[in-house]
Length: 481
Ligand SMILES: *Cc1c(COP(=O)(O)O)cnc(C)c1O
Image (cartoon, rainbow, N blue to C red; front, top):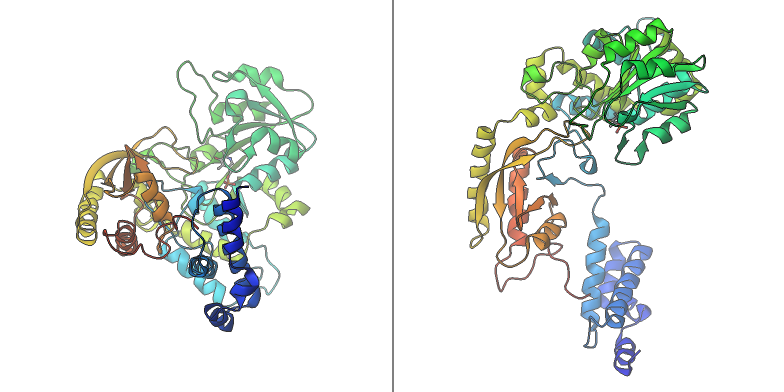
């Protein structure tokens, strides 16, 4: 360490000295001592690091350290997780909490959270009921299945189904369907954790019915189809339709399980959406058990829905592990309200935000883009905003190969790189998550809701501050400390 560095380090104010500073004493009046001490310690540590790394060559002054500590206190005072503006155009963005809920689902949650509800009470008889019964009827009607139940997410649904219906026995799966989806869900690992034995058949690109048939042994419990949610095998391919798989399973007294991932309750294509497997068709084709996520294309709360044969659903419901995966009342209330929309498809297309966003036409998006462009141009004079067409994706392991034509407002910041602007936008008072393309920040109108517009414009204006102006607090990362 050079004598200069040592000199600079000696000039650093100590934590104890800073705690005696008038400004810090003021903070201590309103905040817990521990919080203030930690913020001051972190500010001193950051200054020390900057000196050691050679990023600072001047003596550090008390006010710089205190400013850094104050930044830290402001950051800690914010709720987390908190609301962010999704300008990525990815409707089902797992990092941003997937599906936004319908107004009816939100009302149901607010109502349920503020009081009591007959979660496990049959009001007619006064007896204890099963919580999933509240949605079972709707799910039966909408899917055509005999019975239905609900768990915390579709990963749990898959694990539970395999454990209860195939634990200790073989489950046959096509090699082309051994998926890995985000958040460390890998089918072979889930299979192992469930206690079922994975029997892979076929090849990556081609699996025939005869491959399943020859792999069946006395120890086989089920044939499993897994929807290749986040990838597609294209080219010289062959797979087996769920109907043929079910027919084979029944001929050999086995169970046909269909993990749809992002199941939809109607024919997606006929409603102007890219094709995704339909729960109702899978049941109609003979699948004994079908599972899917609540917060993918269904557009509801995070949960895993299981529908199928009554005898099998009864076994799942009766298993002790079911208790460990049970959903809370808020999830159930939101799911119920979401499912109600599907009783009238026209209503669902408008009221379920996921569907409305996915169906938004390029014309509609272009109108909204021009309105945003106008507001941005007014709020950040000197910056250029362009309306451009682009392509986006649904996300959440849905429709991976379907490029959705979309419209974005492009911003090439005049005083910073697009990458710097995107980072600063994430840390703005109203955080904005956007993507960079061709060194421009892109705001995709598909996922920007009307209520997001004003805060979005404010955040962009703050990040694109005028020369000579102070950078807004929280907007720009402090240069050195
Ligand atoms: C998404 C997905 C899952 C996991 O669902 P979560 O609701 O995220 O737990 C399981 N299987 C498939 C095929 C999926 O696409």
